[in-house]
Length: 324
Image (cartoon, rainbow, N blue to C red; front, side, top):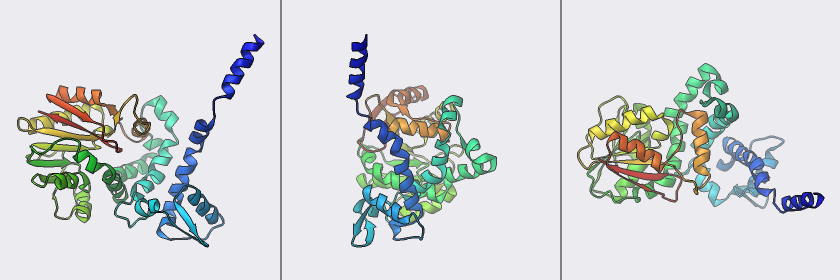
């Protein structure tokens, strides 16, 4: 019996604790990034404070800054994605993660047990309403979504042959990054972005006149004529009854052989952890979740779509093309 106990101890000793230590350490890395970004470190600001030197040194170790003599300067990574004025900046999403998602995630246990988002618990009734407005239309959030969209939209536009379509309407298309990517690959496609009026005003700063910008509410208003609708990161934040209603509306509005391009993170058993972490993110901040291709296919078939193809893109967002 003692020999068995010793063998078990020996086998346990062979397992490295490093993966667990990295998980424990993960929030410290995130918060270091959030704090440095908010304090303007990657924009050249050096605020006074007893801990600033430590923050700068930690950013060096994390590969975000490099030391040149006595100065700290951005690495190429930080200059491209963390500097606020960069066209590819992720600052908006970093700020949203810091001020909204980070506090919400503090109540993950409650969300897991109760099955509901944590807005009220985190911010109180009034603050929750304000945070919801920020989530769905705040300029910082939209700029963050623009930065994230740039990482995926070109690959999504290339995922399927869209050359047979004539008119794309990107529903809730925000700054137009997906419509612009499709237009770049298929110049003959007429591309339209439909979103709420405040969002369209921001979209003009990014899209200009390269695509058409239309103000409206795709959930409640009649839809513009199109043979291809796009839904980018729309379905994952909604309940299944809401998804069924929307997909049926789109199916009825499409001509024969019309299609829907759905852009979401597809869950896979052998896939990266990102999708499952994002599904937990949906748990704490929305009524939705991430889904597998099979789960989306079921919803699409129920709405009347006949042919459904999924594509893993290799970037944060994947693609589904469903044909009427």
